[in-house]
Image (cartoon, rainbow, N blue to C red; front, side):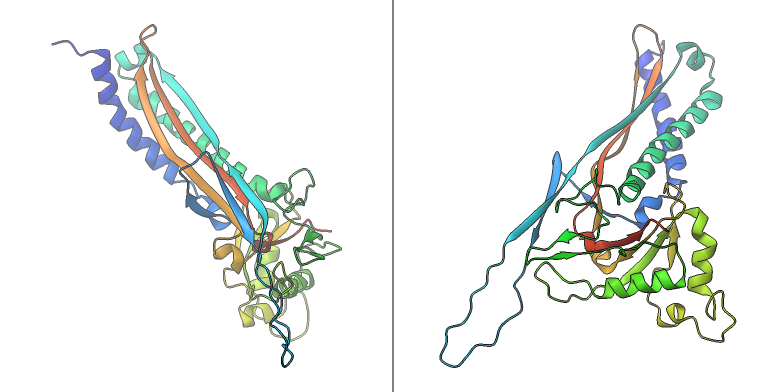
Length: 305
């Protein structure tokens, strides 16, 4: 009994799928150090900031209680992108049993391309974090000195004068994070969690965070940042950050799932089919997802000096 083209495709598909999965999983998913992942079942996701109440006033004897209003503030929208790529094996390659030598290389290349796009799209949220061309729901960039507050005034998640990563600039950033307020001006408990850096800053970050004594001094002072554990997540290197001087600090708001997010609309899917006219075997990878941010308090950043 002759083997049909459709039967041949079914014979090849399990092998290709297995190879694809092994290759894709072998790459470090650096975006997972930054973004909280959630599933999506819609064309887009939208999150709305709900403001709480202001500080409760003193009630004078015999006077009525003051009523306050909680309201909706800005919305953050995540619109999913479809990412897809394909390749084909010729009829002759399949016929001559070149699947092992050709198919494996193509599958690895396809996996690398899909993974690279996902990492790049995630890192682009930070690469554009200071740009006025990429604004969030509150109308300003992710990292800004003038995030509008519903109770009036503005708040910042960067220094007025940005500096390179060093002990002093990191201490100032950690202090700023600890003084964050909510949209009504109430002090909230926000802690720094993890430092995100490009590969150019890995040695600087390691000396600052992990030295027993203060880095770069002749004093015998302890390393207060290490001693107090103010960055429990340490640091993570992201090789897709474009600015070699920029650094970012993720906060407990982000860990709680209210800061930077990646919505997975459709997980990675692979498919294979024969082409009638050419006899080629075509293999495709596809997924849908979106990267973005909701609450700017999930991150603090600096572009360097």
